[in-house]
Image: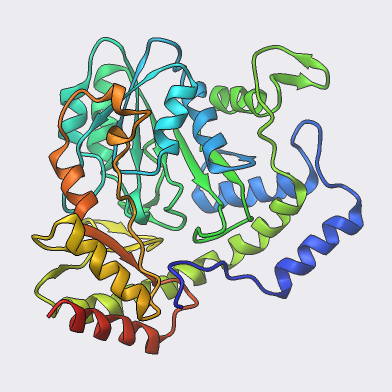
Length: 367
């Protein structure tokens, strides 16, 4: 089976873990272990952000950012429904109401026009997701946020290494959130990061990460235990050094696959938004004029051929049983995409021969 994603781990990561174990420093009560601090410094430099705060997973990063943005009980947060559930989960955990809006059908990212139409007096923040590693259109979203006095959280969990108008994603947001889950472009096993250029926000995030403690056993606000262990940070330091090469390999595979799949009339390959560079976390195609059954049949046939195709995401959040109560409007582009798209492997472990096999198999199955 060619997996949809696979962590690229070798002896360098193993040695980094062993060194942490030998050091005897596995964590730090305030989340400031030496490897965590090194990873934060290196990641902030890579993202070109002033502050980076390592946490134990991407959902924790989102929750901290939403709370850090001042979102509280009774507030509304605008976000896409076509994303992983953690994006909405963080809003509800903060006591606020998620307001789901539609996507741009070309990029699958949140529509700035839909955002502006959804703003009310209760709106506190906007969450933009860089879905599949494709940068959200942040300039108009930033203009909308500034016009209405709103904060922006950018869910960049899938966008390590992506660029928007020449800058790393997150540059136009108040907070950017990253995941280092095992399938991501770089991994720490689990793990996450919040980046920001605002000193005040960064200080609040540090308190939120560690039980509201500014010093041990002295909590000055409600917080959580969202610390990253030293072993994860050590893996992260190694993976971050490798990330540019990982992205380059993903890009080569994506480019080769696009050339091949562009010849298949029934498929719409992904396109990079103008002035952007995709991180190619997921290579997502659309089966034109298809329904869910036809799409799912193709995906199952690909798996039977040894190709780990997957559907991200078959169930938009606003249609899920728990979140259906927040549904206010139809999201036709979101619902259509959820029935027609599927993703194909392009990670660094995929060979040229496998890319050719994927395209040839799809060509045969769609005839």
